[in-house]
Length: 453
Ligand code: NAD
Image (tube, rainbow, N blue to C red):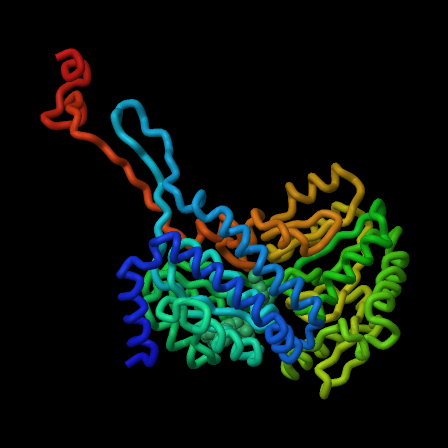
């Protein structure tokens, strides 16, 4: 028998009791989640430092404060989102009332990834609970300190019958995926995404897949290069490049190529000093396997600025790779590490063609002062999200849905999009017993006969 079956059944029964239907219960859980983040801020920061060498401020900004803002926004809008949504019914159905009633799916499985291990486990839990679902959370085994803390604190703060945590790796996740969950939410790479989707097919379970990809950047000659380099350097070397929406590679207009490279090198120094290994603000690679994978991308690259590493310390320095071949592994696979390829293009259209000839990315970034280019970028590049003249910051807008398209994922969350994604939007038509003209009933006669008698 599946080892998780008994607890799963209890959770299903608990869901069937209707406890999570009440908005009061949902609010309590969300408030408790806020408390759990606030009361243990130091422990979260320590765990994230242990797993990824994250600076405490970075952990606060990208995980704790991010979640707190998401919960506060959800709490303030919960009533509105969960209300029935009235729609117009046609006159021939008069008198009647038509509306969409959001209802929870049931018990969800949330599978998290390691790079933002707190945010990716609890971020989906916020809309899941808000929509009235219960959940099993499976944090990533590659960030064990954060996983253990999640497993220890969740039952202390949340309704332990409604939200459970299962720690573990492939074997545990495989066993969980055999169960007929009501919704699956997976964050991670596309290969495992396919496994999750196959498991979902077995039970016809709806799912959201938050995947990755190579998020491109184009820097036009019209851009303010200093600001561009500063913003790019922040987004690229945040969490040592292990961010799903990090700029993966840069296409730069030939007229400003050298200027951009100089400015990026200056920014690396400015942010992390002469020796980034000594900087308290620069993170570490999650494990040796990923470190070796990333270093592998540097092989056969003739123009590498940087590239120092220290395997024992899981450290790779912020590195630029100039003019890599577009068909090299560096330019074919998601880098997910602190290497930034810079390729030169002759103009905006060449950049657009380059990006459009590849898989649809999770994010796409344009740096340009030309408003016509900005509009063309939005019109012609298909990606999960976009930022013009900055990177990553769309995440700070609670009402911008977050998610990929094509190989970068399906489904969206954050704000109302998350609430709707994890709700079944049930259509309801209510009628009365007022008699109606017999237009639709057999025996069928001509329309004229029936209307005029
Ligand atoms: P990971 O190794 O932590 O794996 C993700 C989850 O899948 C883990 O919980 C793991 O236990 C589980 N898993 C691994 N192998 C499995 C298997 N064979 N069967 C069932 N479950 C399995 O994380 P990762 O995949 O290395 O994450 C990095 C990828 O995730 C990158 O591509 C990144 O872009 C993407 N990502 C996307 C988002 C997003 O929101 N779109 C966020 C973070 C990361």
